[in-house]
Image (cartoon, rainbow, N blue to C red):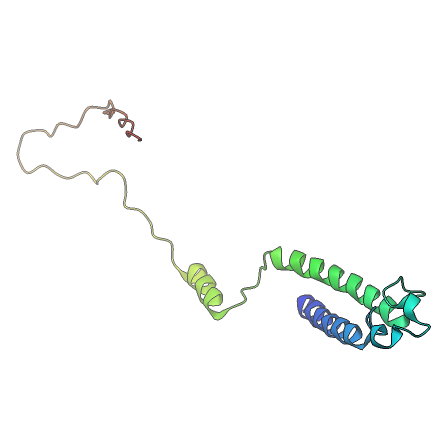
Length: 137
């Protein structure tokens, strides 16, 4: 919800910046009529006072920068709620799956059919040699 509001405000700011830039006159707007008349000093010189449009453009650009950073931060945060149907199905599948119990490690004792007793394996574990290191070029 918050992300959608910030995104909508971000798009509105982008639209307003584009409109304000298109409405403003450029520095060389008087260049065609300026040569030879009295306005040649301001053709490519510094601008005087800033207009309302230029101030609004600066404010909107700063807000656009802030919303960009906010959207980047919100986008990196992991959401606990699944966003897509596939994520919901995967989450439902993992919660409803029954755990698989492993088979017992020792087999149940069996009754011998012959009269000779059954001998058990030695109690000492058998060690395996470590794997040989791989040759790397």
